Amino acid sequence: MKKVLLSSLLVLLMLSCQNDQTESSKVETAAQDRLACSTQEVLEAQLKADPTLAIRMNEIEAFTAKQALSNPTGRAMAGPVTIHVVVNVLYRTAAENISNAQIQSQIDVLNKDFNALNSDIGSVPALFAGVTANVGITFVLDQVIRKSTTKTSWGTNDAMKKTAQGGLNPTSPTTKLNIWSCPIGGGILGYAQFPGGSAATDGVVLDPKNFGLSGAANAPYNLGRIGTHEVGHWANLRHIWGDTTCGSDLVADTPTHNTSNSGAPAYPHYSTCAGTPVEMTMNYMDYTNNYSMYMFSNGQKSRMLAIFATGGVRAAYAL
Image (cartoon, rainbow, N blue to C red):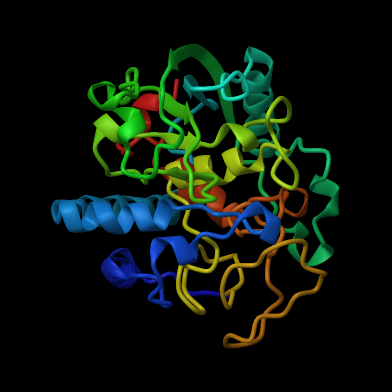
């Protein structure tokens, strides 16, 4: 099990992925059965553009660590966490103009996955059953905003979040989770902004081909788990392998992973990192196929709920 060291945070924030590859070579396509999340690459670009971001994120980590010590359940104020969601649909084709039913299906998946109500939760192996979490976050669809565009792809420079660049500005980004549905391009399925970034670009971006359960959603990313993965990032979760070989995700009860896992790994899958632990390949923050990921851990729960606690960076989102 990993020891979470706050002093390592700044190094983690500034660390590039160990393999010095171009963005295009990092991206794996669906045909290769690999989730392509660009959240870490977007973070690295934001850190270079705004050196004060690392300071803000360090302060968030200090608060998170304090919450974990004083309140292991992760919640400092009474009552459940309810997050209101605004979905911004940017479309060029009819398939990209995803239906309200497809949008609601993604909300439904989030509610199941974040409350351990997913039908595959029983697949968690006995080794990890004791740390399987009901995070206790409810998502409510607040509004759908649609805009026809001529863009075939948007990339990861946050243009979709800016009306001046043809996208849509976020709605009430300090109190509501904004999700953009648009073709990202380059094989990228989605990305999110970690807590601490600018409110003007805060939220999650998903490609319409893997948004929810229906319509344009394509296997093996047609179960809404890309949304679960990216909202996990938005709620301050790291990739389970820490974005470097045998890295740390700053969570104590997730095993150390060599790197990301793809496809549908057979259980048990052993790490070659110190102690050779069995990897938690079924965790939502790995890179496996949608049907191979079906749990958060208690440590991840505590980490997420800390940001919604009184004094937390996202406290205003929790109603």
